[in-house]
Image 1 (tube, rainbow, N blue to C red):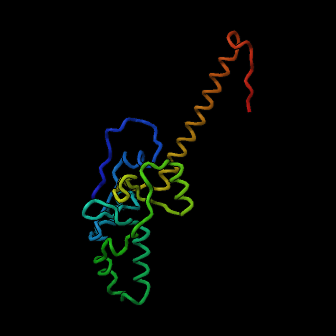
Image 2 (cartoon, rainbow, N blue to C red):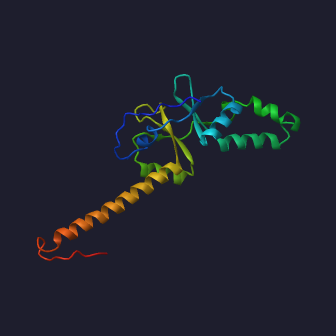
Length: 187
């Protein structure tokens, strides 16, 4: 597993873009010639269901997901193309380029979290590679729909808390003796 380095020098600024999310952690990546039998246990140990596939220059060439691996295995082993006695050997010989999703749709690292979540929901993607806006094949990381949901939920909580705090401060300012007794309307 070749982790994409996380940017550890980032301050605790608010997360606004997809790049803000993926640059704070490691994302696994593999080469097309790597063997799936080695990768699958690594993904399962890490509780990661997707990884990037990169070329020799570190540029994105595909997406590897547990689901794509399983679909490929079931499609090949359930038909007549592979005899039951050869299934284990077939799986042992399977490489990333046999099962990867080629030329996956990507997200730019400067894309707002809300827009990325909307795109993933509309397209039905569970994972998407994030690339540099300046170099569309330079991998920044992988983002999951679950991650985006967590960040959006956190943002919603912060907005709700901020709104309540603002109303509380405004109510205090409008009360006697400084506010001349005005009452704030509540919805």
